Length: 268
Image (cartoon, rainbow, N blue to C red; front, side, top):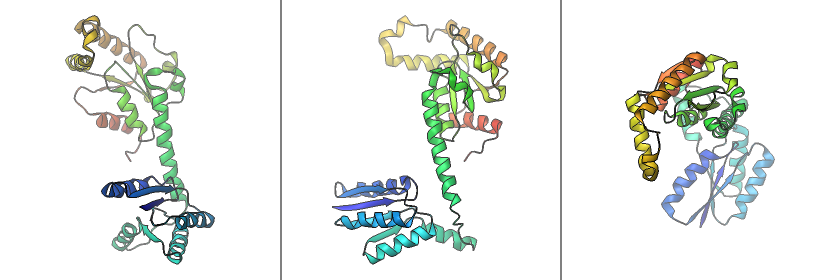
């Protein structure tokens, strides 16, 4: 049995993912342990002690700090511990081609961490306020998506969340009152999704194929009902004065790009 230590000055996700990809090729003969947030000399010493306690190991590092990486390399060499710096060959190649050295500013790490945690926060936000579970999210949202059922509101919000954008969606149903908070926020943050009636009917019928027991007892896919819903949603969107996007023939990624461009977000 060999242990692969995924070591990082952040959460260690990149190193751990690669370690898992390697372990797959060796069945149950490889153990994986992650040591995150190695950002100081004391952290290096603590990590080395853990390496030494292992009978046989390889250290996989994604540490970007030059001083910390040099310290870890030195200590692993002294202890005869195999160390692989995943970033080094790529950084060296880029430095060679650009004829310049990498920027070792510690702030670069904080920026990466900030982006990562911003995305996690946005994902949690999208799940918490999905389908208007709590209308208090309207005031906290970067974007509010409104539209009928099966217009891909939820996956769109999750996609935007992966870009670090706090998005919530509100389903438009004739029998349900529109949250008053919507009319008090900037119309530039509200986006309405519309769809071709025939397309919506087809989507809803396919959805209900999974629930044949109730298929004949619901108006969910009824033509007249859908036309009524579309008329209602069109009326609400006009009242909100929001930008309306026809999602009949475009993918979620394209819809998200339209929204991000309208709000001035970069597609990173």
